[in-house]
Length: 143
Image 1: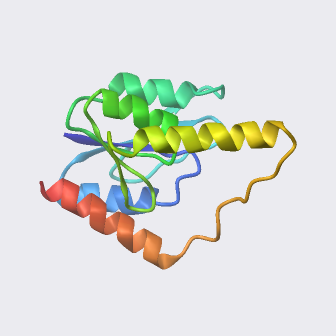
Image 2: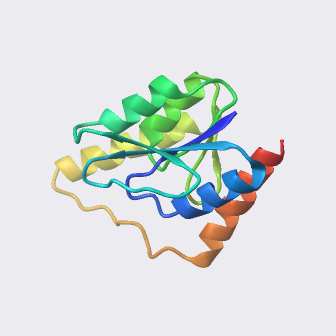
C-alpha cells in the first residue's frame, strides 16, 4: 500500500506526509511544474503543466488498495475504478455510492458557469477540516 497525493493546491499535504512517516507507508506527491513541492519523507513526482497531466500520471501509478488524496472528482472516479481508496482533503471518502452524484453536480455547475452564471467558491479552510482529514487517513492507514 502507498499513499498518492494530488498535491497541486492540496492543503493537507503536510498532514498526509507526516502520517505516512508515522505508519512507515510510502508517500508520493504528484504536482506539475507550476506547483512543484518537496517534503522530507515523501517522493515528489513532477509533470509538465497541461490539462490533467498530473491526474493521468497518478492514475497510471495507483494500484488496488492504495490510498489517493484529491479534491478532483474526475480523478477520484478513475482511482475508484482501479479499486483504490480515495479521500477528499476534508476527510470524507469518495465511494461507488457518492461519485456519480458528485460528478453530476460538477457537470451542472460547469453548465451553469458556461451559461454566464456564477458559482460560489470554497470557503476559508477551518482547522476542523484538517482534523477530519487526519482522522480519516489515520483510520485507513491503521487498516
